[in-house]
Image (cartoon, rainbow, N blue to C red; front, side, top):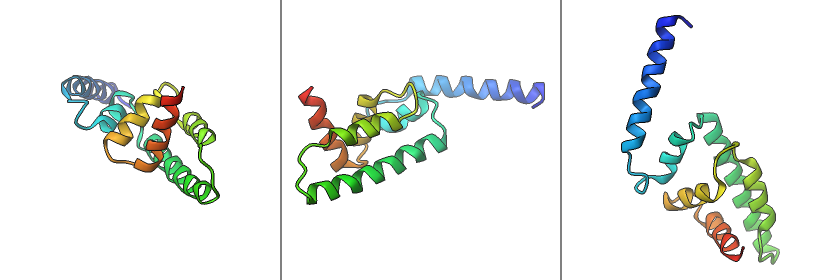
Length: 113
């Protein structure tokens, strides 16, 4: 990467940081968290894939009579990129209407602690 390209990239990152500060994090909390956490498209897709797998597993376990899903919450926490706050991630996904059933179960577990 040339010096000019590096400077241009640094400027764009600076502009994005300024725009993120102006964002209303309550309106689109998951999008805000993605940007604030500087997650890559791959990171986000990995989180979505994990949530899909855990949602399917939760439904399977519910059908088998399970009532608590602590192991699934633990898997979720370990699947997140380092530095991404897991409780805030759960709240943000839920608020934005993503994986509602799974996030509801995770909320129940968080309230029990």
